[in-house]
Image 1 (spheres, rainbow, N blue to C red):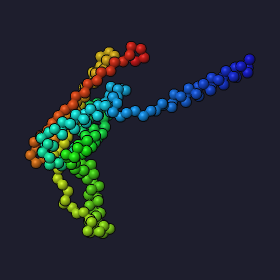
Image 2 (cartoon, rainbow, N blue to C red; image 1 turned 180 degrees about the vertical axis):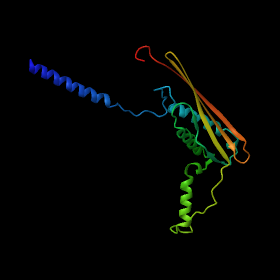
Image 3 (tube, one colour; image 1 turned 30 degrees about the vertical axis):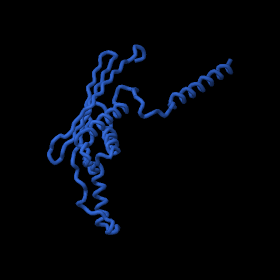
Image 4 (cartoon, helix red, strand yellow; image 1 turned 60 degrees about the vertical axis):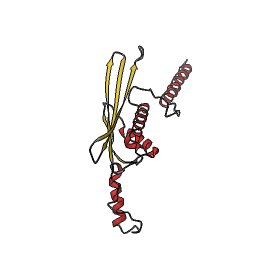
Amino acid sequence: MKNLIRLMTLCIITMIFFLAGCATTPNVTYENPEQVETVTPEFGSTDLQMIAEKMVNSLLKSPVLQSGRRPVIYVHRVRNRTDEHIDTKAITDKIKVALLKSGRVRFSAVSEVNDELLKQLEYQTSSGMVDPKTAKSFGHQVGADYFLYGEITSIKKKAGRVEDIYFKMTMNLVNIETGLIEWADEKEIRKEARKPLIGG
């Protein structure tokens, strides 16, 4: 009888360790990044992609980018005015990469790497380590023609098992010389999540 109890105890302990191991090891798979993501109602990759696509397509159709002169744009990071953490740099970067790939616009890097640019210019002109024939000098950076900025806002409502989330992304392109808004657009996204009756 004692041997049977020991055997059962050993089996139970083994099962506990096995189940604990299974519970802590996730099943990871690669998925298509373009696939619609609906794991939670919060802001996700599909929302980011939809916003970027709308803004890029709209801006490419604007008179500013139809002129064919490849204006220089200074980009300000999108402001997050929602109550959740959203990586707004990821939104800005996606828009910027798509616009650069179009070949119809150039971007000033000053907003992102100004300190590094100044350090590199200082090193090339003052350190004595760089051949003066190849050293870059101060006063030759290209000034931006336009300033691109935007913000994302949200409204959340709950009633019983239903949660409704509304996001709105707005972007503006301002002529730096005149201060006039030359282009603006917005993208709205609305999601509804319904908790199950059991287990919610």
